[in-house]
Amino acid sequence: MIDLRPALLLAGLLPIATGQAAPPQSPYREEVRAGLERIYVFRTIRTEHHSGTTPACASAPFRPVNNDYYELWSIALRAADSRVVATHEHDVGGFTACFGPLERDEPLRMFAVGSIAHIPWTGVGECLLMPSQPPVRTVFAFTCHLMLSGLPQAYAGGFAVSSTLSPLVSKTQPPTAHVPGYLSTSIVVIRLWRKPAAARRSGGLAGRHEPSG
Image (cartoon, rainbow, N blue to C red; front, side, top):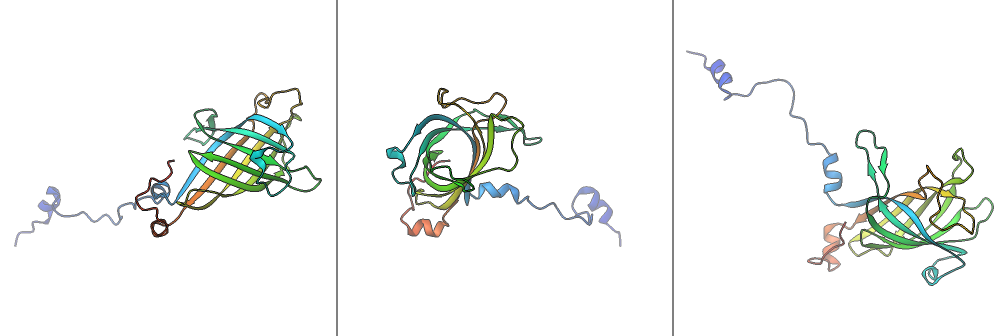
């Protein structure tokens, strides 16, 4: 009997056993595509500052002594090493932040109301001074974290965390004052978790237009 296997292999009609399986589909491709959470990364720019309280801070769970308004802008990262290369790409939202009094050895209480990518949210949390500080005395580093509520019905919840560098400005300087060479004020990450599809349907969301972004 004539062995036809060599000819079939050359013709590509028989598989070649290499001992290696085809590489699996990378799970990282589906982390964002699945749409189970929305992640936003942006920078803030303070454009307004007011002492005391304002109507925007009326719902704060503490007595505000200062409040600011921040514009939110998209940023760009260099894919090769994740370095920030642009910090003022597109306007993506804004929020009003209400702060409690500074108390020694206590976190600074924070309340905020705003939106990102047309998604409204309310945040309650606090800010902490960082042990590591820049080598100049005109800025100081701290971090804030907020638990988010007041989201559209499609979302189960979320949180925000900041990496903040705040300039020390006098009362005679504008709210937008900054220290050259330093990004003022924050790089922020917001993570929003979407409800499972069944929960969205039971809540009467089937067929509705859901938030963009």
